[in-house]
Image 1 (cartoon, rainbow, N blue to C red):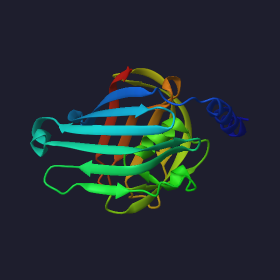
Image 2: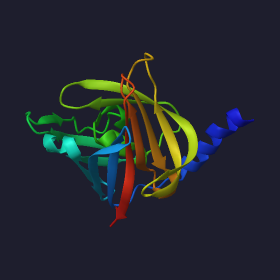
Image 3: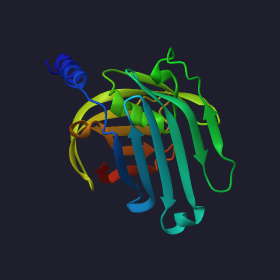
Length: 213
């Protein structure tokens, strides 16, 4: 019974999903080998038609020498999710990377995302089944496939949440892994992102504060 009940339950729960708050800020810590190496602040503003996303990264300890990085994404909000128009990635010591997207909404949202928008797109339209996402970063375009892996009760510094877990599908066993937890009881906001590098290094990005305005 469990095998067929879970997809039905998820589909029913997600069908009544509302968009995230119009203004929300999430502060994260990125933990590597038990130590906080980066502080991240993500900000979302939207009016139901247009959105703006901003993310800033600041290194801690030895990583502070690398300076601060920022990402910006803006575009439109549609029934099938976010449609980026522009993306910018600024990091110390290199030229900014920019992407200009086709603004036509005829392209499905999942087929036209950037490195910042695709995670927040899941908050607007949580996937009911396997989702293939085309992600551009100013250097190229890659397709990532995420699979819903059920609900988990997780605890992060920002609180305890009933979360929908998404797992990145690997083409090869040694590919970089990724898992995302969306807080179902907080508008499916991303509260934890775990990246496992090819060498086994784990970068655990956890929410420490959520502010709704």
